[in-house]
Image 1: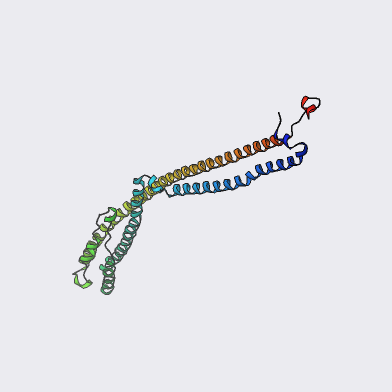
Image 2 (image 1 turned 90 degrees about the horizontal axis):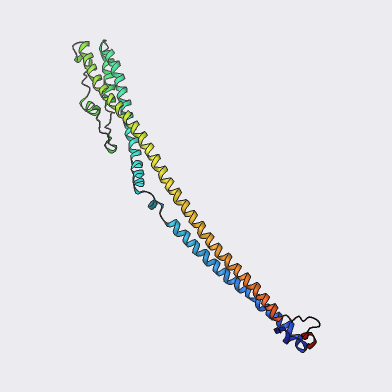
Length: 277
């Protein structure tokens, strides 16, 4: 078989090297064009990938979390400061009331004595302390057990000055009645504090549980997103690798074909073609 190279032998041999060079240049020239188109395509795929990742991140995690969990967390978070406030106010009220009770114990001792001035001065101090008792409401968190101490504050302890009583027995009875009123209120305060501590622990435990459940869902959602992004990245990478490999194979084939077409035919010595040429 006679190749194209045959036509560039003999007198036209000078043209052979030129044709061969031109053929190689034509093949080589394809690479820069491919590299340019490959770069454009790669940038486009990267932009598409970035857009898909952005869309994945735009999906609100809240939509993937059970609505009940989200609402329950908000409810518990709203309760927390209300519980703290009620607890602190109740504790402050009990502290003031206990202070009044301690002073009433001292007043009872003075009621049995003869120091009217000391009795009246301490009574004035007790009446002033009593005015410090404030109303505490637990309605916001479902607590509505009244201790009756505000009513005692408004109505007074019912104790008069030292000389208004006929004897020590009457003074002692008046102080004892006042103590009884306050001690009953303190028992209610203690019960409320015990209940609020239990409730606070329960709310804290539930809030922690709900938060952990939400975080678990968010983590799972994040894991799915990462897996999907990796899948997209692998898919794009595989496509580009396949495209690049296909070009290299076609380029190699083109170079081989060019060499074969422009290569002078090899004729073995002693053959008919050798004798003709």
